[in-house]
Structures are given as C-alpha cells and as structure tokens.
Length: 88
Image (cartoon, rainbow, N blue to C red; front, side, top):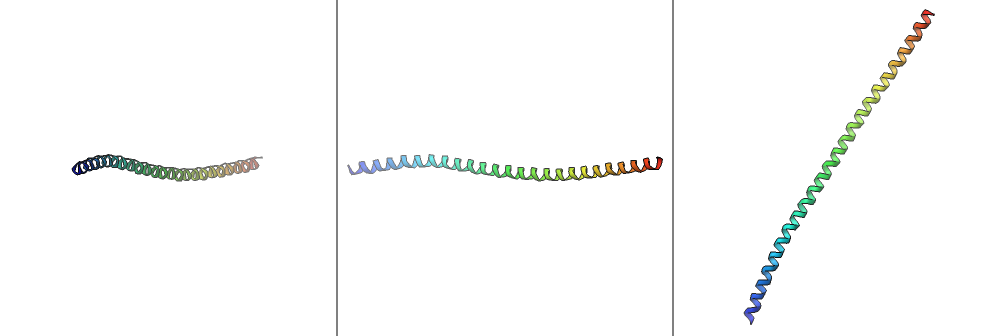
C-alpha cells in the first residue's frame, strides 16, 4: 500500500510537471507578444513625432514663402504706384 502512494505521487507529479511545462510555453508566448506590441507602439509613437516635426518644418517653410510672396506683391504695388505718379 505504501508503494501505491509513492507511485500515485509520482504520477501526480508527472501530470503537474506536464501541465506546468505546457502553461510555461503559453506564458512565454504571451510575454513575447506583449513585448512586440510595446515595441510596435513605441515605434509608432516615434513615427508620429517624426511626422509632426516634419510637418512643423514644412509649415514654417510655407509661412516664410507666403511672407516673401506678400512682400513681393507689396513691392510690385509700390512700383506700379510710382510708375503711375511718374506718368500722371
């Protein structure tokens, strides 16, 4: 009878170790997926920041261009007025 308990204990230990081993692989896979998602989220945040920075640079260039365009238009109007005054 004593050997029966030992054998039963060994079988129970075998099943528990098989369950633990199978659960450990699932646990590792979930952790790997979680890390991948975190890395993807960080990469996406980096891309968003880079896009925002590039957009800010583009906006600054457009503003500079528009300001220069307005200055040129103003200068052309002044030249046109001067020409009209000379003719008139």
